[in-house]
Length: 583
Ligand SMILES: [Zn+2]
Image 1: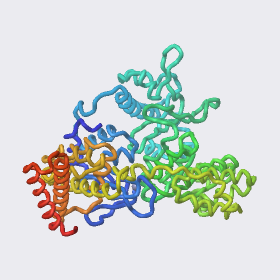
Image 2: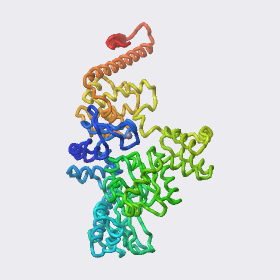
Image 3: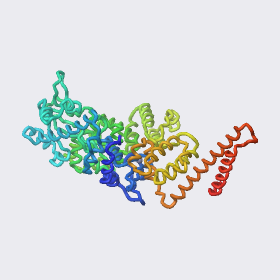
Image 4: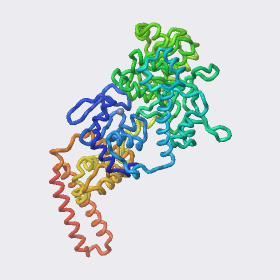
């Protein structure tokens, strides 16, 4: 996956420092020779996310996320490696060779779909300011949306006809079949294509990398049509995975350490207009786990805005379970019946909203309050299914105690009735490579040797001469050794990394990022490993000689060569033993 374009990769890394990149999302501070901060990939109270600037890697103690600038970028933006490569290349001013991004049909479709979405966004935007956009502009004015906000969210207007965008795409040389596959057009029964969005106020949806990947549209005029529609699923966009406005709000969310989550496009716009620039919205679905994870990359607190009616409260209860279940905090702001945040802010300003926020219950309290009114059986079922859904087992007892107290349930009874949680494998790759089988001690020696190899690759030739690889007993260690040693002596981290698999890379990074550099005790460690290797070889030779002698028929006619070899190995063992000073 990263075989091609290794020189481009190196060049980009040289131009975009990992600290510079990570700082766009994470509040890093210096700690010795590393940078540390709160991990953007899991929820935590202590900063366990660490960046090694010199080596260009990051590593998280908590969730074992690790990698270089490309890994960080693709993880935080949800792009794949090639997209991150392309985007960072553009930023760094590095031109990628055609061969560094081998064309695949799917890759081409994605690329073209992105270009078409950019094109469509500009096209819709032009429409809004054309004569044909008068009605839509009037609507925005009537809603009180300022030009600033219209600009910030790049609002647009799709013409009422059937083929405004299709014609424009065709004229610009795009493939209309791909236009349909990317969700901008639809194919009619007789193969004709037509626009998905007609006579609608257009809200472009950007992913966290800033690319337009979908649109939302609000009907203007025709009262019979669906009020809002969204792009269908496409190679760029999957329902329930993205949030409208997250891209525009991401900095404010990270700075304020909290996000305001609404259900609507216009709500998001209005919140931003009134200074709540950390607002974003779900896109035509109830809040999903995936969306919550994405938000959780930026903050640990979410303020949920919901209508105060029964439907709104029910939706809020569901959203709370998703947020709390992921280990995030939330509060529920219920709007007065018949009011939405848009009308509230426009009619009463921020003060009324601040009042609501001040009294907003914390998520679990909200759940308890809502469930107190429900039938006991319903409440109990909810509690059980909620606890089953909590991602981190450590949080279950905390939630269980509070829920039982709040709902007057017997905690012991409840615990007994809960099915045992199936032990999930500890967080992805937590055991790194290794610890899979074999004795702990043997694994420890493998780890020690491989840690040294990864941290001090300049000693690989010496280790090889000493036969250090013979000491390795674990498959993962042998594999890392082979791949690392094959790159020696001209040691190039990028070359090594291109050979390692995911687990091995994780081990590699862990050593490079976490461990203190071996400055003074390098030689001692090298000598120690070499001594162990020599002892092992001597032992082997010794055993081989004895075996060979036992195999001889005539006990009185020992092979003098064998005797000599045995003596030598005994002598060496003794020397090694005394030099070791430990045995
Ligand atoms: Zn982490």
